[in-house]
Image (cartoon, rainbow, N blue to C red):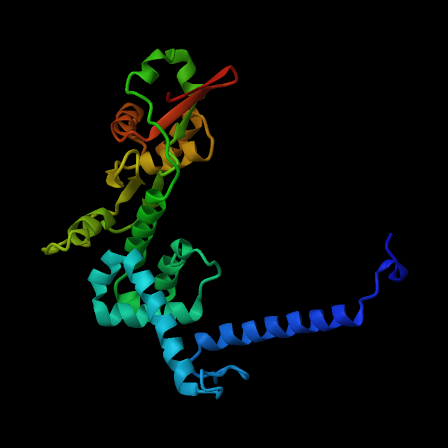
Length: 284
């Protein structure tokens, strides 16, 4: 047990250095709070090349930071941008930047919470599908930057005995993302991602369950049959096929395992399987 007598005393130089570090941290915190709040004054002690404090200089820097963050969000959500237009998107992204500034120096991560923010952003409530469209775009970004893995060849599962299939655990590609929506978000995404005319899209159509993955060079977005999303999510959670099928049947009593597996093989999203408890097979 460490008592007060065990704590080494700081020298005057150490106390001075510690005080400087605390003061620097306080100035950094004040700067960070002021940079995204236009109602806050420039932090004290912040001066320009002329040695004088300048609210105007700080305002210019503040605006550049905010604009840069807005552009980062815009680059990550081109479909949302096209759906709402430049004026609305810029205003919405500005509110987002103010409410949720970056917490990491890695800008790739910034904007991950934007879909949830859209769901809470009252002016966007008239576009009920917008948050889901943003979730699909975020899934695309995550899939694009996911780890590499080699898909199993179509013939790999043919070597599995039928009696072993129920206990089979399938390993999915690291890029696989599942997005479920009550709206036709795959059609919305397809109509907008290429900058083409959206046409007469019927938002009253059935919702989409989307598979987003990058099995090879490009990210692919596919519409899943009913029940397949629940099945694949169960596989991602580590359930064997028999357990995953139960999840698919809860969503769709007519869930077709054979056609779902064929679709997954065609999409190249199976990278390995395990026969419990004997052995594990991965793509070469």
